[in-house]
Image (cartoon, rainbow, N blue to C red; front, side, top):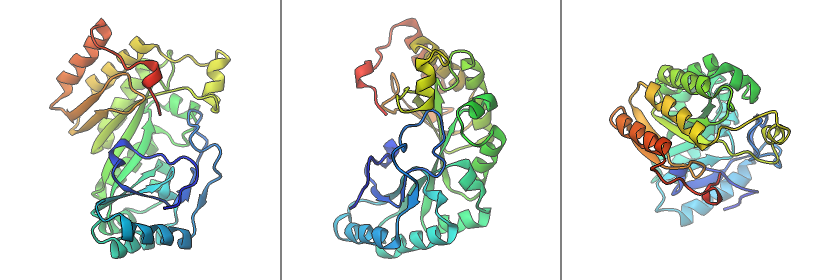
Length: 288
């Protein structure tokens, strides 16, 4: 299997076959993200991808899921992605699900029937970075979409009966708009009705615009208690049935369960953290 640079995948894709079908991110302008700064975006050739599929056919028969990397494989033109999903289905018939990252712009570029066609060929899960439902924050971090576009993109995925995992980012609005960000994000998620909500915590990176702003004193990340208050508001305001995970390595503690079943338990855990009776993950052990 051939990979270039660091390959990033969601925690739930730890046991998937990973095909790096694109390099980098077609957007690559989010002020907080340094993952693909050294990778000009390109779609890998059919020959390169074909060699990796042939490798998986020989050596990956125990793995039942596929993840298409890098940052937003849905940027591949529809006809070509359709052909790729068909190729995976034909050559790896034991694979039961294909997943990928996608941004709202690439989702909205596709008609609902095109998403349905991809789902019929095995595309069963899309991971979409919402980060925030707070429009001033979305503009400030360069997401390239407002909350209205985010909601429509999420609903389009769900109407196509594809599992939608939405990521939100604690701390991304800074100290000033922390609570507004939490409330607006919960409201957008409630409208979107995703299958899964995944919470990460912002880690400031030296190679990002947001990292530079923080060093210059123009952005202030909430402290751990501020992040806990933000998380508490987010969870309190969520009103949907979905998986809920705050199990990423960037977080200070783990939450993992379902809404609304575990909502009170989640809130109690965050309240323990606010009261100082919950152990936080040490800074040295946090990672992206």
